[in-house]
Amino acid sequence: MAEYRTLAGEGQAELIIEKSRFIGYARAVSSREEADAFFAEIKTEHKTATHCVPAFALGEKRELLWASDDGEPQGTAGAPLLALFGSLDLANVCLMVVRYFGGVKLGTGGLVRAYTEAAKRAVCAAGIAVVREAVLLRYEIEYPHWDRVKNALDVAGEAVADVVYTEKVGFTVTPVVADAEKIRERIEALTSGGAVLREIRRTESVVPVRG
Image (cartoon, rainbow, N blue to C red):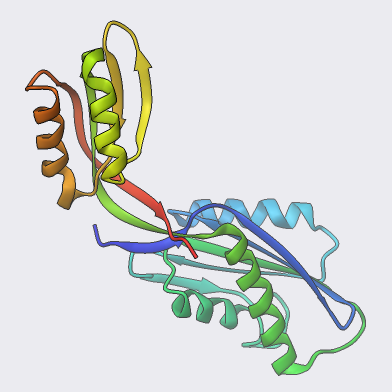
């Protein structure tokens, strides 16, 4: 799996230009079916909208790109959304910009700017994340080792999840592939070889991009 940028969450934003209302929606998706369901959900919410402009970029390298102008002049609505995917280097993501016409024509350039800005604001609201190939490690360790292990993982920037306190402490850590062996060795050393690895499998790590 190649590392790629996508959305950290779901975003929505609105702006009004010359009395026209533009509402941008953004969401990370992994398939055409997910994107279509997202578009259908928004169109159901905005049944009286003048235009509902959809676009998606699927695949880690944006192998599948699609957009529609939904009745706007050709190249003024869908194309700007596709261009945004490229300029922000986003993959596995979909956008929809809903327009309620306010009675004032914006012209070709005005439409391009309006749809681009609505989409940008929605992406900003969702946030950007980097998806990397990772290794999920599920451990059980003795209580006396827990604080040392937790502190060491915190220092390494590895988030601990699914902590369970029973006879032992169970937890999950998901380092990227390049760091997985180093994390395993560190946990083994801190527990004097007593850590029990209950599960190990390849997965994805989604890391929000700050700023």
